[in-house]
Length: 210
Figure 1 (spheres, rainbow, N blue to C red):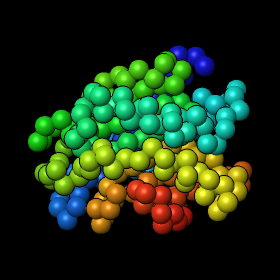
Figure 2: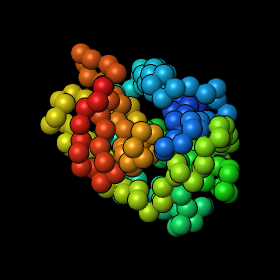
Figure 3: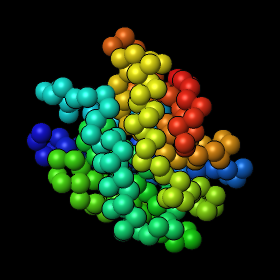
Figure 4: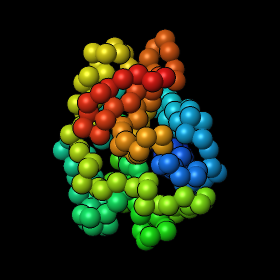
């Protein structure tokens, strides 16, 4: 895959990190250096870029990046950089291309990393900017709650619940409405786009919400 196309994919992953951060507090938006987008628009844009990147390849809907052993290695590498007691804003993984993570750096600042499958999965620092008057501490979760086994288990459930479903990204973050830690799983089938599933952090309560 050409390097510049892979870079676009990584940028699209970073764009999906535009989270609505509020838990019974005023809106507090998080973004990388890309222009802030709503979650729905960012997901759509990311999917369009991923489709373009995959135009000449046939990819598995599960993908090596979601394999428990592979994901465990990514989490171990991230933990080595930010510590076992680190708190995350969100964790995003693409089934085939890589992923990104955003974490709390200080009481009122955040930072992040991204990695690319085709570039040896080296963690590359990315800038994370915060805006708004909410509290960062209300919008993070311990990295210890990120279970590498869950995404693959969810894919297996989806294969039964929504045959032909192709996942674009798997994102773990706090629900902006009730503060619950959840996986967001957008994707499409041959006949429908814009499908979104949601599940609890442990893989339970999988349901379609869009």
